[in-house]
Image (cartoon, rainbow, N blue to C red; front, side, top):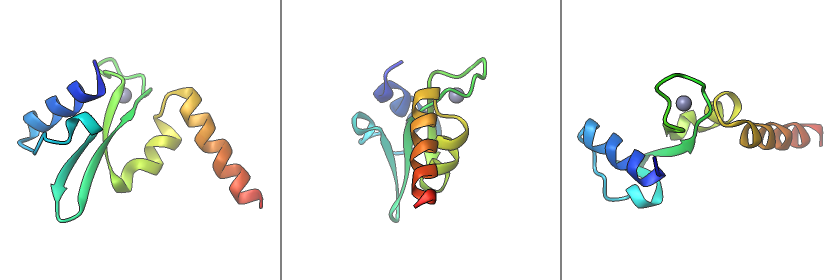
Length: 83
Ligand SMILES: [Zn+2]
């Protein structure tokens, strides 16, 4: 499933505006967005993408992103905190 297909389907199921699907996010209005991130959560119904609120992005990167992305993120944070 492409990112755009995932975002479009999510928006349609949720009654949200799908006009930014090709860019990978949903505009909820009032400055709030949900973004599609690669997902490696391992759940049976996972399609490889997760829709995440802005507040949820960091937790997703740390816990559910596919391994290379998760490692790159955690390494960057570890380097940052070591300085
Ligand atoms: Zn998942």
